[in-house]
Image (tube, rainbow, N blue to C red; front, side):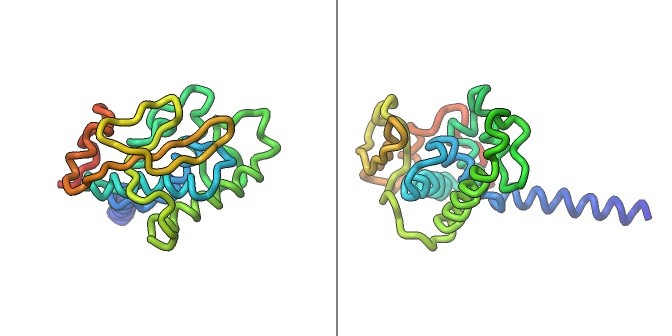
Length: 192
């Protein structure tokens, strides 16, 4: 009996490790990043462009889109104290543990939008959606400077600001994007 329990535990652990490595939860992580970067009322194409950037960067660096969303999005990587709920978002009837108390009664509306963004992310990742921002490999707000060697590819008005997307003219070599990957995450998640 104990042997069976140990085997089941090992199977569950290896399944979780496989999901982590293959990016099984990529749509949810990308939805979290998109909502964290853009808020709840952005245009669908802006959400899609965030996911496209993560997907392109994952392909160029040999990692998964789920890991890239976690490592590249500042809203996920280092959320401010009042926005820690972004990392906890899930499609659920109840809000995340650190969800703002004054919004508890409205969670159902946010959950519906999260499910919409998660489905959109799944469509982008599966190639079922038309490209929103061709060639973009970096994003930032108006307060961010244009990365060296990049040109603006797309821009969407989001709230009182704008989200900018940038592309390199030559993506033949994955090393070209290294200067736009924060040093703290460069090389993380590379496949052996």
